[in-house]
Length: 506
Image (cartoon, rainbow, N blue to C red; front, side, top):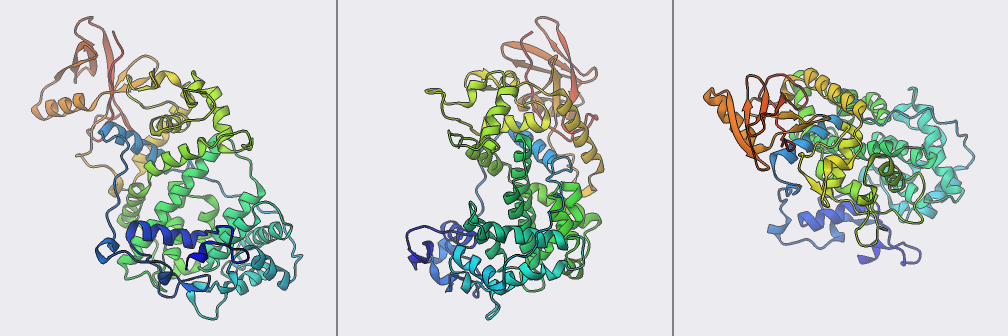
């Protein structure tokens, strides 16, 4: 049924919502769609819309590891950012109360707005249940709000937010079809999913102004939410679901309510999660070891590789028509203030196109959220030392280190790294601390096991001696000594962390 990718009226415009997009990815990567037998798209069974691959190709494959620099140092840089992101300091705050939006459309007018903007909406069913049309629920929500949140502090907020979205489309304002398609697809699921989508779409319409960091926090929030969704599905599968009782949407609310503040999940969604009665009734509050295990798993599921590529992909869309308050435009402004060599974000041939790869994307995120790039002292980007490309922010660096140390100290026992985790040692290079390289750290680890207090190594043409008692690195040719410290998210004498560093020429 190839026609379903086009609009129903003219069959000239491609229309792809979340439901179809997910099914396409499943077929492309898993061999077939994993939709329920009752799931339909534009009146057709989702399972029958696609040609399945052979049986052996249909089996889910293990996700390939994103190749972003396989060494331990790169992995530790990513890990440090994940630990920084999954905390209350990097959070989309709960929105201010939406201005009261009075109902100004009749039920028939509301119905027609969705019919005009959402292809196939007349066939959308609530949770695949025959006779339960999603459109009827949308008309009801416009008039009376969301029953699941009736009598709560956010009932009026959600009601006004939903009406705002509908009025935006009725008044034929920009991206009306896109917004209503998201809402309509959400109404094929439970009220928890509906409310989250209404919150997100209404904020987009209200155009809440963000600076560059704010845009990045919003992008990070999407990947936090994805990690929580994946964990919710995993846990419901362990419980014998997903099914009507073990429902990932409501287990997601359980996770958000129990871990939301600690992990810095979206403030508005946290508030909704705490009010989800189905989550409270079906799933026990996560405490102790179970809470720690869930937090650890979310850290593992947070996809830093995909986040880097998403930021890079959006940053390079800068052009003449780019809005002034968009991420690409604000990235240009940020670079002019925080990069000593601003031309490095543009292509070398014409200096007219923004070019951002994984290495630069990672360094930018580190500067914004950690105060400076954590790259090795001799790492270069287009011939320039990465450590010298950016203007460091000492205040942000101190704030980040304090936050990371506090998070490590307060983490549940199950989330703390084991003694087998890699070591971090940093050398004082004057204006910043630079991590030692993995090969040097390996020698340090071996020395500790053997009870030796000195480690000898070479770097950039110099021979060095590392005194593990005095915590000094000595250039054996010049006699110059530099202080060494245990790095990572704390500076205690432990073997829990690893970074890398090389020393500047002495």
